[in-house]
Image: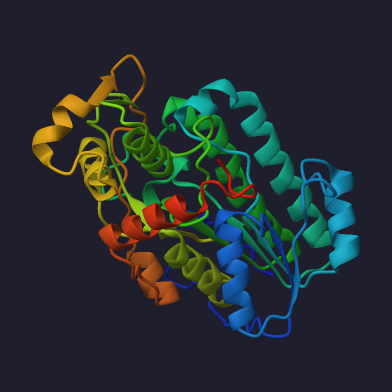
Length: 343
């Protein structure tokens, strides 16, 4: 048990990276049936983890103490990887600020407290880059995590996730709970959420372009001005980074997980329109995109410094952006009529 009161985002020089072999461990993965979780579960199995518990929302309401208690009673986990979240794009964040704060804070609070009571060996918390201040210098470095308030539309969700890091560090100091804390950038890939009411920008654009092309529509509508920039990480790369944090980290030092590049939303729209065939050439694009500037752009820029991940986890992104987009578009076209796909 350590009583180092240095804030975790500044504590890297003497990080405890005593490795843990996950093979043979009982691992609970909240959100394990979801977009990111299903990839993590596959990668855990490839590492020799055979006892994996995936709580489903219908049986385990993790926003309640009773639901979390039932999870620990039924799964008896040695390691918890907490991916489950209530989150959406800009519109969903605007409509649900109270719910998103409560749900994400409640899940972390109950799960971490019960991890202590059940003496688990490690708790892995997945955070969000929405926790970064609105005008963080680019590329985002972990030491700037507390230098200001997050972008307004994402703030309730981002603050709840950041509070979980503080709780884990407090539990490290007082109770000796070992943990890891990672900050993935915006994810994309096969099996993403393509529901236009709650999806993020890449799956929303893919769906709009493919459906417009199939319907013979002349235009699609896109929120904002296109001036904001974002960084995107293929889901398999993110899953590998999170598992390496579970294996290597024993304290909640925040670690960025990203691709180390950014693209303006306007350029992203052009790329997806061309890859889907909706606007095969740049000359056609201007007449096919209607920008709704009355809608917010969100945080002006997002791009991560991933030097800490490379140093502490020996991790970096592997899948190129166009390759990842092409795989995602192909998956959407193949599965969009599946009853289990999130459309």
